Length: 403
Image (cartoon, rainbow, N blue to C red; front, side, top):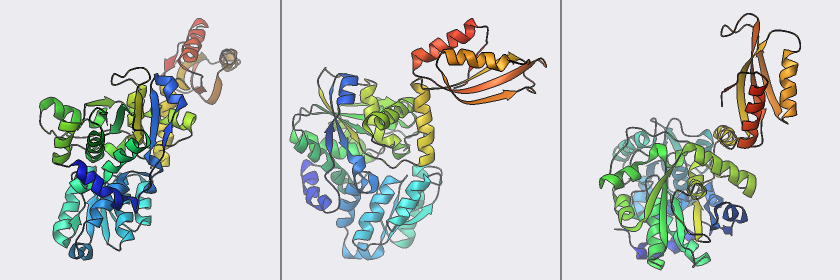
C-alpha cells in the first residue's frame, strides 16, 4: 500500500514542475458555514489542475527504454494535460486517449502541451480500454490516471503543502473520481497527524466509492452522469480503494445542483473559477454534508479550474435557477390590446427584470381567443420568486414555472 515515505520522496520531484499553490482563508464561506474555511487553490496549478503532480512523479520514474517507447494514458481532460506537459518537458512522446465528449477546451489544451490526442469512447472507462490496446500494440508505458502508487504519491504532495501552511487543520475535504487524489492526500495528512479528518466527496451521478464502501468491495456503475466531468468514473481503482477504506474517514455525495451553486457562489463572491469537479468539496461544506463543529478549521481542496465555456454557461444558469436568481414562466393572456402591458405592469410592480418575452397567438395549446406567453425573468432570490408568483396568482394569472 502507498506509504507516507512514498509521498515524502515525491516532493522534490514534483516541485521541479508543479507550483506550491495558495491556501487562502475565506471570510465569505466561513461566515456562510460557521466553520473556519481555508480554500486550497490547486486550480491555480500549472495546467489548471493537480494532475501535473502525479504525472510528473510517474514519468520521472521511467527507465531509459520506457522513455524511448513513449507513454499512453486515458483521461477526461486534466490528467491528459498533466501527462502531456510532464512528458514534453523531458522529451517523451505521449499519446492521450480522451472520451469523444471531452470538453473542447481540454482537448485543445492537451494538444498545446504536446500530447497526441485520440478521441475514443463515451466516457473515461471506454477511453481507458482503447488506451490499453495502444499500450499493447505500440509498446508504450501506460500512465494510469489514479490507480498507480507513484501517481498517488505525487498527488499526495498537496497534503504536505496543506499541513505546512496550516498545521492546525482539523478537516480536509477532497473530491473523488478514481481515488488517486484523496489516497495521496489522506496518506500525507495521516502521516503528519493521525487526528486530521479526511472527507471524500463524489457527485451523486458517479458515486462508485460510496456504494463500494457500503458493500465492502469495489463496484462498477453501469453509467455516470454529472456536470463534474473530471470525477465521472464508473469505478474506483483497486489500489485507491484499499487506501480509501483504511485512511479516509467519511465519503459523502453532492448533487449537480449543489455543485452548480458552489461554483457560481465561488465565482461571484471569491472571483475564482472552478470546474465542476473542482467545486464538489466546497459544495459538501456549504451543504453541511458531514458534521462539523462551529469554528472547526476546514480545507476544501479546489483541485481543478479547467471548465469548458459552454459548460460554464449552463452551470451558471443552473446555479442562478437554484438560488432564485433566474426564472422562466408560462402563462396565458386574453388576445386583446393591452393584455401584455397589464402583465408587464405586474412584473414592474414586483421589481422583476425581463430578459426575454415570447408571445405566441397561434399555439394549439390555448383557445383561439388567447395567447401563450413565456417570460425569462431576473429575480433576487427564492423569497422574491414566491412573492412574484403570489402577485401573479392574485391578479388571476395561471402560472407554470418552467425552470
